[in-house]
Length: 250
Image (cartoon, rainbow, N blue to C red; front, top):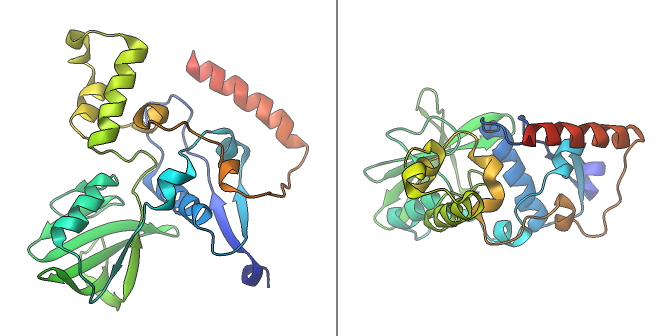
């Protein structure tokens, strides 16, 4: 009965400390993007299940998420070049074969994409005939074997850091502005070098504010007149969290 009236969504925290040198798991990031997309494009009222650590962290604003999805449907017009451009702009990485979340591969008239679906990975194989989608099938990323056909899929950004030409330029400008390092020093900075070339780098998500011109927001900016349920322990947990963040920053 509850699910008839509300959409129940999870908004999990990253599974790493702030300022860490490792990235959150792709599955967590993918599910967070999916939740934010649903909240930015509400079909009905939602119940959001979340944690202190998740709501304590600033995120990209709703206007960056709202129109970030692409609907791919069998028998509709779209070219391989257009879908490839969309995938690259929204943080997908082109590979020889698509095996992990956020990967895509192009082979002749076929585009393979791997995304998160609940707690699993799912691949979608889009078969083109000219500039039209002939068919869409699920495939197993591990075996690469095609499975049942689907009529329509919605492709969302692969990450909260959408690494493209513009965001890469934003990062370079902000990094130099905040640290004032010379180009000779930056040449040996692996993080700076990788992101300047449009390559992902472990831990880049912790530099989230540097990638966007827009100010980051709270998850509550996605919600309209929310009713919040919590217990008193959360206030002590918040104090502990701020101390841990301060230590990580130092």
